[in-house]
Length: 360
Image 1 (cartoon, rainbow, N blue to C red):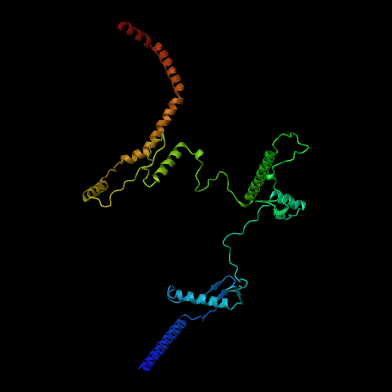
Image 2: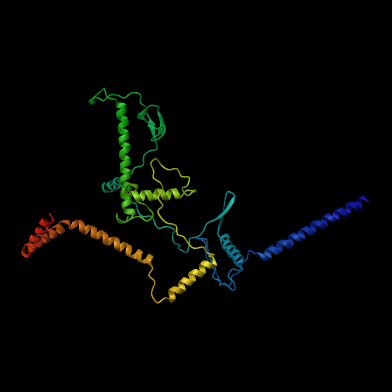
């Protein structure tokens, strides 16, 4: 019984293993048949391995959106097949290939950098034939008898840490602070180098940057705050307050600041769903205007048009009155003398005097 049991168990294990391998083989065969590494093209594509460029020249048939994924897979597979045909080289744990020279000259993303303007020293060195000599990175320190960096932290021959400075024989004032003088000279050298660097940058900017005329305003850039008028500053402050989450309702004001002045009127639109009675009245008004023989004068429109013209005329009259006050008085004086002369001739003046005496 035990032998039979072992035999059956062995047979079942063999059968299960066989079934597993059969299913695995069928699955592998199906995948290989579905997505094979061998790709055939009716029209030879253009392959530029230097740029990893693949151009499929086969025309699209039917709906272009259908089968794009499969077509992209085949094209990628064909590109990799061409890559793996190149000479391979193992670098550590990776396999690499050397790409050939590109056949297509693709355009640059950005334009070629312009040649920098040489500095003042570079121009002088070129004229005099001075060649740049590479300085040593390390120097021998006489104090510690060691090789140390020429510049930077813990540099050799560092005179900033000297506790004693020997007074030179040609010193004008032997009692002055030579340590402070050394520090000032270093600051002057640093400032001079920075000034030279800024001048070189400005010289390069003149050649590389093409600026427009000075009078032209840059789009998107506001004017300086000092150049703004009082009204412009006020308008900017109001706009900044309204830009908050509460639309300026809880925005704290500055000391002595005036209340916000509304710079515009809200447009009021009629409701989309108007009552029937109001719509009926509007329609009747339109019909009455169309039927009337006389054109109806719209006073509001006339006032809107004539208002500015009237104001302009009044201003001109006021201005003319101010300018011609002297002229007007001269005319009145001439008329008065003329009337007086005419009255003497006609006797009106004497009559007036008699009438005045009678009244008295």
